[in-house]
Image (tube, rainbow, N blue to C red):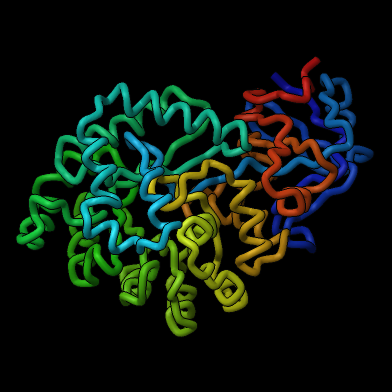
Length: 408
């Protein structure tokens, strides 16, 4: 099916050929054909061959690429609302973790859940993400920490990709934390990842991730896991420099990680090394909001030339949000990015962090993953925090959300 999405007041293309960061086209139109973008430009320049197509009128609203959420943990069971309240009463994350809470409470609930229970819970989360304009999402395992549950989680992620409009990108995170049964045998758990988990999990994943930070895995342990992941064809990602300065960012540069995520305590020297290694910085401002800690140094990373993505880190403990609009607002209001930089980081930046070069922009040949805002400009997203301005969502040219009744 082909049609013209027209009367667009502001079209964010992210096309690098245009002079501004967001590649904005005013009074624009987009031709959608076969699920892809066929033509983009000012509506007055619409080629004659497209003028007979059905027109969908955006009503003078803004259109932008679908959000690409490049860091989530949204397949899990249970919740940790009690821990959230305990943190607000003054307990530290480390104290809660030491008392048996934190990640391990989610691990216990996830181990006890069936695949269908995990699928249904994650489907509801993806439904809400889609309503908020997210069209592609990365999902990590890591709440199993045993062979069977890690495999089951990745099977659920694959099923979501097959059955849900939102595209999913699977990441193996067996090295999330060391489970209690291996508390006195860390080396034994790393060996389990190498020889037990990876052979059965790697065929279901694209990336191998490690939480390299205080209370999780050391630099040497992380390197060992990533090297094992590479032997099974998985590219490296890393959680680093969140809870303290661990040296994980330097490791990410050393191994040429696709992304280094969190980076709350990264130094300028490490940022330069990440830039030179071609590693994307995936920043998670909703985590700092939830944990009441300083925001990641987004301004510093951007100014040093490190490509930046922003993501929800949707998880039950430290960032239970599914809203990329909230993340954009936090990146602009609290983390130091401009509104334009925040929008770019939530769309094109996320696509680059997931090595999806056809996503996160509106150019000929790209999938028609589009968001129509009920607002005249994308700046309204950070300008009006807490308001879901998404009026319609197109996934590969099909309307999967249409609150504005644009198809009438």
